[in-house]
Amino acid sequence: MKWINGEANTLDWKPSPDDKNSGVGMYGTCCTEMDIWEANRMSTAYTAHPCTTRGQYRCNATQCGDGNNRYGGVCDKDGCDFNSYRCGAKNYFGQGKQVDTNSPFTVVTQFKTSDNSDNGALSEIRRFYVQNGKVIANSKVTFPSVKPYDSVSEGMCTDLKKLFGDNNDFARKGGMKSFGDAVERGVVLVMSLWDDHTAYMLWLDSDYPLDKPNTQPGISRGACARDSGHPDEVERDYPNSSVKFSNIRFGEIGSTTGF
Image 1 (tube, rainbow, N blue to C red):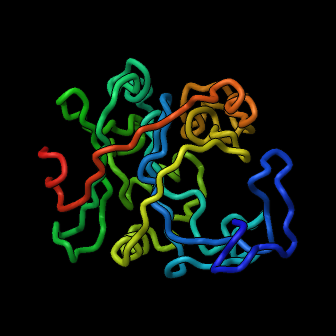
Image 2: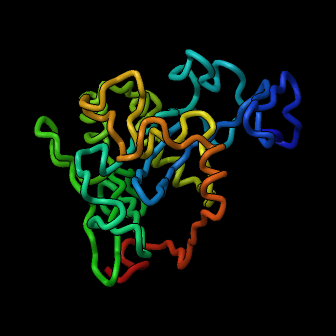
């Protein structure tokens, strides 16, 4: 970030070699994050990222989880994600698939509590879609050694991270309780169209990380090629890419879609 808490992030600033609008300085900025809709026409994921700090926090070096200290920072960078393709449902989301990205659809996210009250502890984050007047339930985890989860929950995070061999920083940063407390305090909605100068979006729609075989559970996250997603190629070949967000609503469960 070029500006953090009203101050220019100029100390030790190093411009990005391939993006004139970005770079890295001495400081970073951290906060609890809900990736409520990360997607392209090939793949999608929704991910909860808890932190041990309250609100926006200016971090420095190890606090930010820089370098080899990824899991030593104040926030869970990996998060707990539900990516249908990664969870084994490879024909669920995409062009011509059950949720067809060739046509508009509605994305519905529900934050459910342990006692179904507004004051209960967050226990589950559910997802479904509405397309052409039809409600499409979320896909399920298909790995036989794991329960057929269809939402983000503490159990789903624990079981899938163990199966995938992922570091369960989600639990160490407070898990669903920490994340739920942050959402209760209030969050800001941000919408954007972007590309990835660090990992080329492979974590969303291809195999990632690249040093592991895609036969290992959790590595294959989408059908895109391993050498795809380079920002210079994306911006050169698809200069007219666009996205439309409309009819954004929030409210009590069942009040925003009629389903």
